[in-house]
Structure formats: C-alpha cells, structure tokens
Length: 331
Image 1 (cartoon, one colour):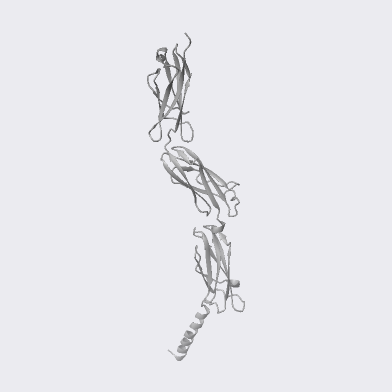
Image 2: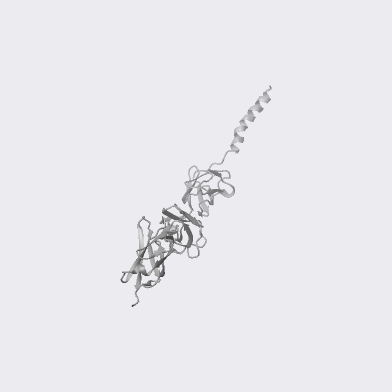
C-alpha cells in the first residue's frame, strides 16, 4: 500500500463523525418555551382530543424540525414522544379510556414543561342528578309496575331529550332497559315482577350521573279482604228460596284476586251440589247457591248469617259474612 492510499483512508475516517453530527436529533436549547393546547377540551368517555405543542427558541424562532417533545397523561393514553414539525409545531392524540375525570397532559423538553387539561366525561359539578321511583312499590308475583326516571342538569333544568337511561334491577326484569328522556327530562319503563318474591333494587344512571336507586317489594299475591253478599237477602218462611251467595276477594292493592279458594258456610239451608268450596274467577269472585226451605227456618226469629273464608298471605283464614233476613208472613 502506498503512502497516498494511507493518507486518503485516514482522511475518510476523519470525515465520518462530521457526517454523523449532521444526522443527530436536534435538541431544544436552554430557554426554550412551549405552549400546549387541547381541542376539544371536553370529550366523551371514549372520545379523542388533538393535543398541539408549539416550541420556540429563546430568540422566538421555532424549534428545529425533529426536536423531540415528551408527552404524558394521568388519564387516557397519548403518544409518549412526538417530533416538532414545520413552524415549531407538533401534534398528538389523547384517547380516553372510559374513565371519567380530568386528564392532565404535560409536554416537556430538557428544561421546559407545560400542562393542559381535558375533561373526560362530565365534571362532578356538571353531572346530571337523577331520581327514580316505582309505582306501586309493592308488586305481586307476575305483576307489573311503572318505573319513572327524572333527570336534571346541574342548574335544575331538564336534561335534553333523547338522553339514554341505563336501568337495572336485582329481581324481576325491565322492559325497555334503555329508555330515552323526553323533553321534560323524564323517561319511563316497566318492571315485571316475574315468579320470585323478595326485594328488587332498581337502579338508574343517566350519562355520568351517580346511580339512583329505589326498592320494590315483590310478594306472593294473597287475599287481604273478602266481601260477601246474598241475593236475595231475605227469604220467606213459608216457601223454598234459592239464594246466590257471592264472595269477592281482594289483594293488598285493592284489586280483585282470581284463582283463590273460597269456602262457604251456613248453619241454615243446604248448598247446591253439596260442595262448599269454589275458586274465584277472573273477576275475583266465587259463588254458591244456598237453598233455604221452610223447615230450615223453623224456630229462627229474624235472621241468620252465611260466611265465606279464604286463606291470607300468612295462612290464616280471612272471613266475611252476610246476613239473610227471614220474612214471616202473618198467618
């Protein structure tokens, strides 16, 4: 190898560091200033916001393209490092992760750091308030009740129409589990009791509101009252009379109760067919025909009672009665 080749090789090696320096990542100089902004500054629980960083050198000129800016957030996700582009500007995307609250985003270089915030979901003071009620609050098995949800903004005005409501229950089921509010901020749905008795907790949520709850008692429907009437209510002592004894059974809400057994009793006369038990029909009524003959009322002065009984929710018998008067024509 001649001397000229050795010299040329050493010269080429000496050039390598210089070439590498030209490709090094620019560094923000001391005294760099950063500005940070978010658009929009309020996003949904799964929304996004564009984060814009503007970097300037101490002399006011834009940072060199390629200068790295480090980013971080305490809520949601964001690209950890971005590079300054033309005009000293860089952008990144903040992505919400379903957690409501204020996300604090920071941008920094070696000796400069700035912060901005993005509200994810609704702020505590801006959350709607919700009331939920169920009418009636006591429902028999297989019965239904109306759920009413009232949603208000923080200033007390109704929330806008079309806001979805999330409804859940621990017992029974809800038809239209995601109703929408009307112009008055009210939404309605139906609770179906099903075939299990107990206490149902109904919960309503609108947007990022705190859950509102109410309780409903689902009970095994049973009689709470029985009303007995006789037609006719007067019999003649000198002739046979067929008297229709009707018993109507009511539940706790005052509704007529079908499908329950009523037992009739009379110390006077005989019931047709000999059977003294009947089941209430769809109108909550059971009837028997009592035949009263002249020999049945011998010795009676003015009247006698006919009774009807049906089981209550506790297993005891509820009793109702009616009085039948005796008309004794003058001999």
